[in-house]
Image 1 (tube, chains in turn orange, brown):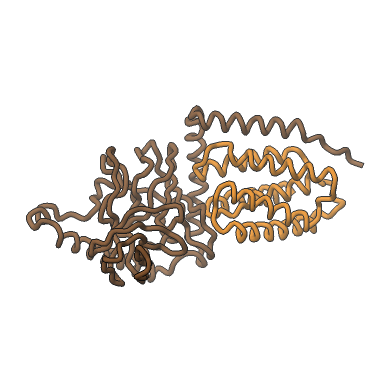
Image 2 (spheres, chains in turn blue, orange):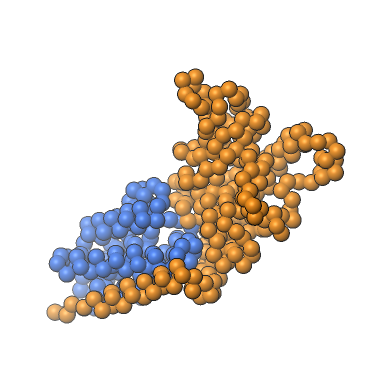
Length: 137
Length: 264
């Protein structure tokens, strides 16, 4: 599982260098929903700092956005079931949309849609691999 | 049943860390660390961008690439020729050099094209591997041959962000070969707007930069090629006419560009 996560993180890093599609939002949504552990905040912090460095932005800005995004997912998770494809799709779509709007990118709907579809695909693959009764979860 | 983890303390710690990093970064006290971190991240970015360029789906056919390079060369010669015609004969005999002079150019590699959806859109921002430590200044023109690619928007210690000509947020004054002056904007396509109705523009004419250099010598030099006119929209009831312009640069396949530094 850790191996898959590492691989996903590396993919996000490489994709982040050549595209504005916010794969990081998708990765954060998947990890928050599947693991429900607070280390996801640190993952958001690290990914945010990396993106700030490669996009020549003010350091800490993206991390703050990611941290707030994970926080909202955690708040929602307290009241409702979040391990569903619908939740992952909507959360990653809205998260991407807000992220792309904040950083003033082009074609935000298309990018958010591509990102949320890929996120659901990866979520389904991981969910199938791990199953709802997995010890790791 | 597993106990629910209390995420509040971690959330507060991470938010605090983000705010500290943000404050330090804004106040400029983080330059040393960010320049240290930029090296490995730029290497990862450069590697992934290089990998993307090699993919058969994204990379350009070598034959087409050669033709484009040849086309740029020829256009560069046409531009030089037009310039020579206008210049004083004695001066042009004395300074028969290509423009801009290579001594004024700093070579930089494209390490990222963040605002880029592969297969859907063309990049309109580049990240270059040269920064303030190489004396790159915000506002400097970025060229390839004598074609304008963009302008440095932001520069960190070892990276810089370039606003490309086709970026909607970028506009500058330009002129046609016949001398009609207008403003280059990007709505859906590159457009030379705000041209007086009395001006005569013909399809196929080259569009050149008018020049916008500040007192420190930083900016866009004049007579760089922006593109060629592909259509003219002239309506007598309008105040101005406009022309659609096509750039000769294929932004998606660029891997090396040059930063114009007149004070080198």
